[in-house]
Length: 232
Ligand SMILES: Nc1ncnc2c1ncn2[C@@H]1O[C@H](COP(=O)(O)OP(=O)(O)O)[C@@H](O)[C@H]1O
Ligand SMILES: [Mg+2]
Image 1: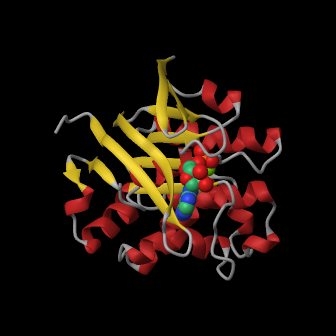
Image 2: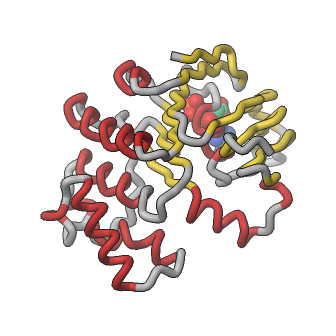
């Protein structure tokens, strides 16, 4: 493995099968080769339906390729047992989605604690870290609020705090500012950039030029293929 690579895709295809007899085929990714370096900030752009979310899911070990290999820290994820995969998803990767995806019945604090519950972090340490993260995203005053009692921007800040709970190596964000007004989006972007400055590799899917401007590398995808990679 190259030491500097956190996740690599080699000749990756993702084909979804649909319909009653699964005879309808959607080729979401068609032969993708890509390496994400530790600590880098990569922006993924492309039209709707081009395969951006699929790419992110594969990088985060939420899904497996139909063909080709995904190597996370050099390990072929197809060869890992479910427990090892779950461990990567829980400890090494943080996810932020456009729709926030918080647990609706848990408070802001409990949402941030949840990944640490799965990781077996003792309660006192968990609480300390969750409070520290909520304070970092400016939500100390909201720890008892349910997601439904928070604005969109606040929910996304909780989602970022949750994504960082177990100090991941890789932060994956799928249109994280897509549902937010531009001012609120800027706050989210600066939190993501801050995580990157502290050494977390970031891959963000975005249509927003301001988000892309923070990245060190741009990747353009179309019809399931990478059509352009630019260093900026
Ligand atoms: N779970 C799924 N089942 C079937 N088709 C899917 C699924 N997820 C995505 N697709 C299809 O795969 C293609 C790529 O989707 P996606 O990765 O979500 O693109 P993007 O995020 O760029 O909009 C689209 O044609 C989409 O309809
Ligand atoms: Mg998408």
